[in-house]
Length: 125
Image (tube, rainbow, N blue to C red; front, top):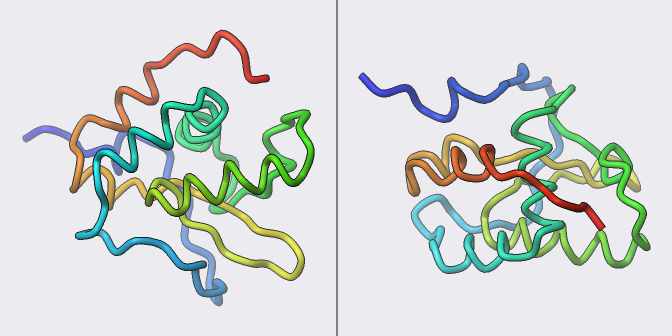
């Protein structure tokens, strides 16, 4: 039986009392063209890859990535990833934290996350 992305990538225990996720597409509404469009931007591809391969917690704030970009630019990129259904975001006070929707994406687009994980970034800027 082939392994699923949920088993290949680090999964952290779901904390209790999580805030509700921000608006996102339902699993059945995920569209490949939207996911590929969001991932066509190298910075967004880098963000998803980092979450897949290097997560230290269940959710991560924008600052965890160490990306030297204005907050407004990062907000735009994270929103594009969330609206494409690639990440789930929750509001923790004034901070939004993110994680990859591994199970939803693996079910809808088998192999996509493997491609993201295998990608080698040339630059993050």
